[in-house]
Length: 221
Image 1: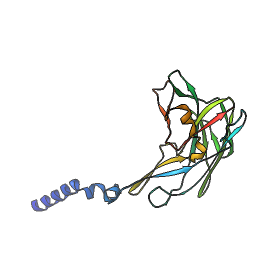
Image 2 (image 1 turned 90 degrees about the vertical axis):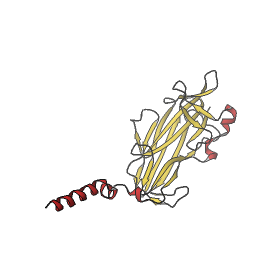
Image 3 (image 1 turned 180 degrees about the vertical axis):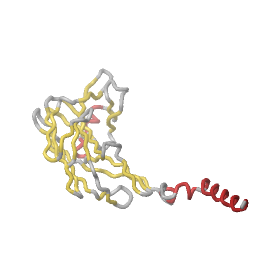
Image 4 (image 1 turned 180 degrees about the horizontal axis):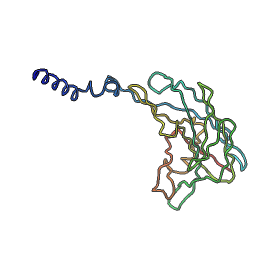
């Protein structure tokens, strides 16, 4: 009897300390011989702002995103989106005496929705929800200019309002917005004489770098 009790005690101890009993299938990454970390770019098209616009003109945004995603360096995969959102934030470029800096421009534009839905609970900027027709997601919106000046606008898309990182078995993908360089109007960096723009009065928070892909400049006359 004592021998059976001793064997049982040893088995219990083995189950407690052995990772195979502890983890099971909860940690599939433990079995990964090559964990993949890659990036995915979501395209956004910007129209009719290349040569500047006038007050009451509309800057138009359009984006079509498939559930089949193509990372930069690895194979494509399917990720069914459930709630794809886009936040567009406009900033006015001003000079605070020491150089160009950004102020929020939340009242200088009015949003329009052509396809998708307006989301009014974003703390800053303009929020929109994509229309979904599986396996595609569609968004067509606009900003109507109300005041003159030089502006920088950023576009950030996310899924379910969290940082946009897609986790798959043995892999993760950071998702970024992509605006074609010809539509970004990067020549304004040269006229400003800087390569980084920060937010005025908010611990100099960095908003955009010249190398970023999710922003564009627009001049409202």
